[in-house]
Length: 63
Image 1 (tube, rainbow, N blue to C red):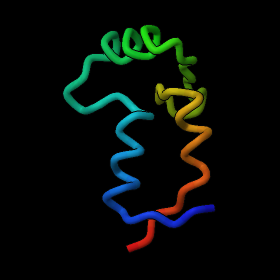
Image 2: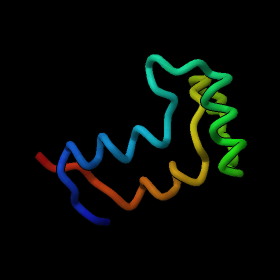
Image 3: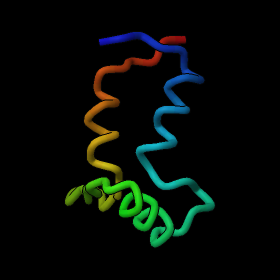
Image 4: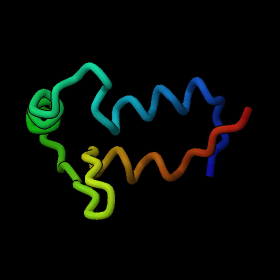
């Protein structure tokens, strides 16, 4: 695990999840254009970039 600042962690999160103003179809197209797999959580129905989410587990925010 690597500790990063909260600002750095927030930047890494932006890649994983759709932005607030971003349409779902735009997020899915962005992932498709980058040849990324998309994951849908069955519990809360959140959509995220599967590979980026796995890479995010190596970081812990500190403040």
